[in-house]
Each structure stands twice: as C-alpha cells, then as structure tokens.
Image (cartoon, rainbow, N blue to C red):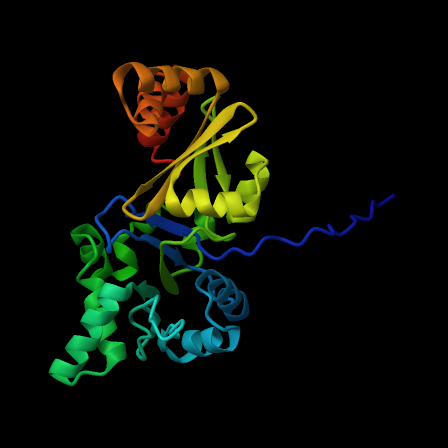
Length: 284
C-alpha cells in the first residue's frame, strides 16, 4: 500500500542569496554585505523583496532589474533626505548584475562629477560606489565569481554556475538575516523587524527605534543592547543577572551602560564561547 504524501501548506521561503560575504565592519560608506546568487534569478521575487527593502515602487524596481539604471529618491517637503538606488547590468553578461545604494553625500559627489565631466549619472554612480569599497572587495570584484574557489562551495551552490547577481546590502530586511547574541550564548538569526520584535516580545516600533538608533531596551527584567557599528546594528540580549552586574559596574566605575554591558558580556563564558566558535569556524 502506497502512502500519499500531503503537500505542505506552508510555502517555501524565497531564496534570494546563496553566497554572502560580510564587509559591514569596514568604514562607512563602504560598509556593505555582498549578497550573491548563483541560481537563476527569480525576477518577480527579487524585485518584490528589493522594492520592500528600499521603498522603491515595485514597477520601477522591476524595470531597474530588467534594464539597469538609477532611482533618485523624491524630495520630502522640498528637501532631499535620501540618495539613490542603482542597478548596473553588463550588456555582455560578463559581469553579474549589481545593485547598491548611495547615501546623500555620495549622491552629491556623483552629481558634481556628472556636471564636471559630462558623464551620465548611471555611469558615475558606479565609480563613486566602487571606490568607497574595501580594497579586498574591490580586488574580488575584478575576478570572476568574486574569485571564489568553487571546489570549496556546497554542491547546491556550485551547481548553479556563475554568480548571476550581487546585491550590496546594508538593511535589516525580512530576507536578509542578522544575528542576536542571547543570554545563554546562542546566536539567533532573525530577518526583518517584525521577526526580531516577535523573538524578543517587543513592538515593531520599539525594534525599529533600537536597531536604527542603538541603545538599550528593558524586556522582562533583561535588557536588549544595540550598538551601531559603521551604520550596522549589532544586538545582544543580557540576562537579568548580567544586567544588574552592568548597572553596578556603570555606577561604581562611572562607565556608560553600553560599555559596562560590553565588559560584562566579554566576561560571560557562555556568551563568549559561542562567539569564539563562530569566529573559528567562519560561521554566520
């Protein structure tokens, strides 16, 4: 007798990247995470996710990912508050599709270069962006497939062939996972503010404020601490016991609470053991 396997009602999550290289510790504005894909691009899914992440209209994003070009964010109250989103497509197909954003300072630099040299904006933005990147990443971008030895890749990744596109990301989106250190030393992945808020039992508004501005947030006697390093949020949750230790340390030594929490965290065997293991194995 054959068993009929029921189809799972839960849809499979969209796989947007299968190669991720983190350069977020580099000085801004080159502090990016290079997220690449070897499998065939799912244009509709790719456009939807980037549209949500960067607040670019879906139709515009789809066109950008199809034809390349730039999207300059509209002014708010007569003032430009954001730079632009760019997608570069090599017509020969030799270089993978690339997407990135320019902040306001980079956008201003690009506009100045455009006027001074008479070069189209979509060409200048690539120059401005790429020269801000760390030297290691620049060197890899000059090599095929970021210079990766495919013999070392997982078969499921390698079988896709060449890298199809690279998104240089800085955001905290539902499709781009980040880690949080928990009191027992676990490194828990969350993608997007809602998932992060749900994990810690806080509101999405509280999560947004924490990861955008940094600082601390008390949660059921424990505390969430977020440091903004090169524009990137680094989050850890401390137990009630460690939170008490940190407050005492801050009071006795005149330290800022964040510095006291860092010191307590470094002296906590459970929290540090997992971090050391992550560094040794190269795990994410």
